[in-house]
Image 1: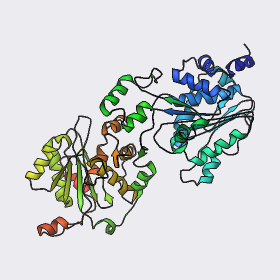
Image 2: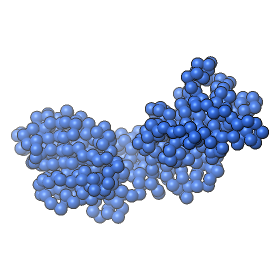
Image 3: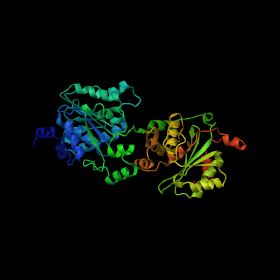
Image 4: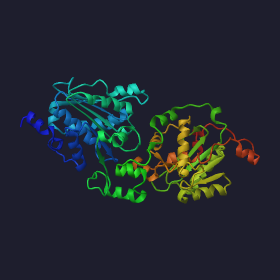
Length: 479
């Protein structure tokens, strides 16, 4: 069969295109999405997806199919960030290009363009990005300037994409022989292009819901069935994170990232004069390990300044307490907050109290001091996030970045709710022990540095620069 005959065969049957070109069988929902993309009446297609079902794969298939079957066609692809585009969708195109004899014969992949070997200037797909700080006009320019008889715009992770980008994409539908607009994302927000496509603009869009729901016969087989059942049994179908990650449904209120990577990295690069923070009480947050792979962490903070924490693995209760006592003495810290959720911190707390040190047990699941938060954990983490945004200094610790940017929150029943720790741990691949320890230092509002000394009639605590400086570490038998 000639290439021309093959292309005519694939033109309205992208499922056959995938089977014959890549030698794989699409999942049932993937086949539905492919056929909807090919339907002559489909101009706008939205994929509302749970986590990890293979939607990026489908977007890559659609891009390659469109280029293979439309002469002199053009595709523009974008995402919420350049990193997301460069790390996910664009490499996915390279993967399937490498599995296709047809595409290797007719097309070339580069890091920013995918083009016809015979007509590289007029037949191509291009990766488009914009700076997050860009104004609406620059955002709109991301997809501007493309014109062709056959044109496709693809927007990945569209829940977070600015409306200005979608407005430009919509404009292309007014011209050309065949123009299509496809978006895909997780239903995390009750605003933005994906939500609009599934709500007020639903009449204009064909919508595919991609789910891991154990009760749905067209569920994505890529979502582990036992894991999905466990999440539903543990947290319930109405849990916002279960709705998004397992069921592929919009929650009652938007799910938001607690902190962005830019905010955390800026906090790690910040410099402060001592007089900006030395008015505040020196305090330690102590997260005691619950399981073998978790870490014991002692995190020091004074006002807007935090310092490198001490991390102890497989340490005995007495050793942890001794290390905290040393930090309290050497740094003249005035307060220590120890996580006592599940009473894992009992031994450390008892040892420190017996030695006369000021210790405050904290149970993360207890009611919050402020009723706007669901519990103490949500309260402390949200206070910590605000501290970062308002000028707090973080130690330059790469592991801490992931721990701070992974958790999400939502607003339910008039209160802020933080994502469950087990869910964070599953996505992060470890327990957020460093961040938990820092969050503990926000168990009470910051107080003046000499408050406890004055209350006890003692002299003001001395000021040191770093409670875990190299000199102190050299003297420490527990490091």
